[in-house]
Image (cartoon, rainbow, N blue to C red):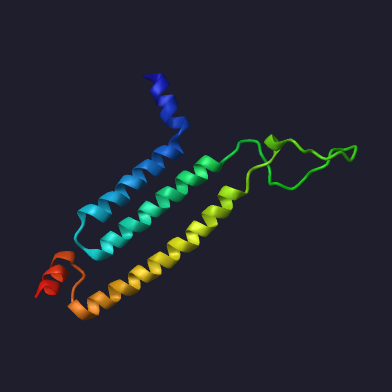
Length: 129
């Protein structure tokens, strides 16, 4: 039992991303309000970003700028540096997520103007008429 507790505590960031993932998925699938679906999508995206940041962490590593020792020799071990690629991809994903959110909110605003509601069932019923 203690081993399970230590495993959960040691990997709390993965558990947090998993919980956020399920909350976002629930919001996207189970809710009828389109705004709540968009909020669920944002929570889902945040969970994925947290997961990728968690995977990219390298304990004891520094930024990938070559450092020199006291006798002016470069430190070239790959284990001394963090890989910058996951961080760049995360920044790109954040920008894409913000753009997706902006487009979704603009479409939601248009749906509200045209149909007078943002409830999915009512919008679909209005479209069938």
